Length: 317
Image 1 (tube, rainbow, N blue to C red):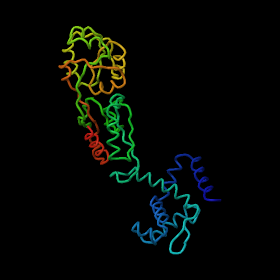
Image 2 (image 1 turned 135 degrees about the vertical axis):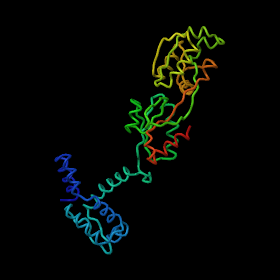
Image 3 (image 1 turned 90 degrees about the horizontal axis):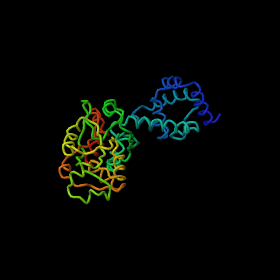
Image 4 (image 1 turned 180 degrees about the vertical axis):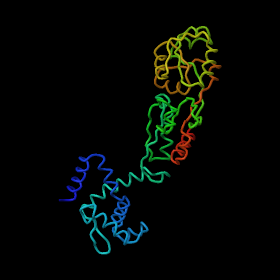
């Protein structure tokens, strides 16, 4: 039986016997033996492998003998001052080297091993569209090996406290003591309408603004109660025709009607590239501000890579 058929037969047998057999097999194999196998394979000799691993040649030879008991093959044949791998050993090397690389990547605490790691940054769709292009460029400049994933925000505090996501970027307010945050940027509020809205030709016609149909953005979080109250005092008589938590929906509605809406100015700058939107001047409203922050579990700072990513993101804004 050639080396390919031997390995395929072995893998097929393990697969048919189910998952428990995998753990039994691994328990019966000293993974240090696989490290020694790789060292002998890469350095083409027992003496060289012994020097690299700081072991005696005798210990290396004994380990190879143990591997020959596990695998039905001599694995290495003496050739001059070194050894040459058998066909079975060459095929085995492909699996073992990939497995050891995966283990090294998973155990890469310091980030010195140049393999991909996934960092999850949860956002709403609108905040993601606003901040992720900047974040992606910044992270790839400093950590090109990282893979970024952008899951949705479902239960922010639980996602962070249970380590279901690494970072969350939003304007939310967290009460969980394990969750920390840093403000990335502060945005001013603006009153928007569609291009060509008749209100654009009127100067500070407060009554007309109040009588116009308004779309109300409903941001989540207790920290917005003060902002909502102040806006209500500015527009006590405004006519609310539509409410939504989705700022994308609000922008689309305003662009296709005579309705008005109040949104953060950075979103206006972004959405006005997609829809025909304009700002209505309203100085007192423009003084109102809202914070957008990066949130994370405080224990995540123990991870040097994640700590570095947080610093990179903060410096990008």
